[in-house]
Length: 252
Image (cartoon, rainbow, N blue to C red):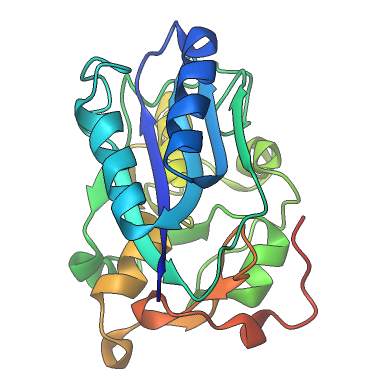
C-alpha cells in the first residue's frame, strides 16, 4: 500500500504551541502530508498520512529537528497503511488541550498510570481483581472492544469524569486497567484516576493499535474492529482495513 498513516502524540510542555503552528503547517505542506495535528500547552496529538518517505521525514523532523528542539524526542508514533489517502486536507490547530477533557487541569506530563506492554495485557485483564475499562466513546465501543471491558457509555471523553464520579470508588476498585485507540485518552484518564486517589492504575501502552499490531489474532482478547478517525473507518489485527466491521457508522 503506497500510503503510510502515522498516529502520534506526546504529552510535553509546549508553551509556544501557537507560534509553532504555522511552521508545522508549512513543514507538513512541503512534504505533501494530509491529516490533522493539534498543538496545545500540554503537547501534540494527531493522525497524518502521506507517502512513506514523506511520513518518515516528518517523524524525524518532529523528533530531532530544530522546530521542537528535542522536546518530541520521545514522540509516540504508530504506523499503519492505507490503500488510498484517508484525509482530504491538512489541518494544524492550536488548542487548549490535545485531547479535550477538563480544560488542562489533569497533567499527564507530571504522572500517569503504569504502562502495560501488549504482550502482558492479556494476563492483566484476565485477573478477576482488575476492572477493565474502555475509555473511548460508545460508538467506538460498539464497533469493537476487549472481552469483558466496561463501557462508560460516553459521547465525549470529558464525560468520563462523570462516569468515574458515579461508578468508581478508590476503596472498592483498587486495580483498574484502561485502554483507548492509540494511548492518549487512557494516559490522561490514568493521570486523572491517580489524582482521585485510585491506588493502582494501568493502561495499555500504545493503545489498541499497538496491541493489534503485536499480538497474534489466535492469542487476542480483542473482538471486532478498532475505529480510527479517518476514511478507513476501522482496523483489525495486523492493522489491516476492516471497514465492513463498521458498516453504517459515519465519521463524527
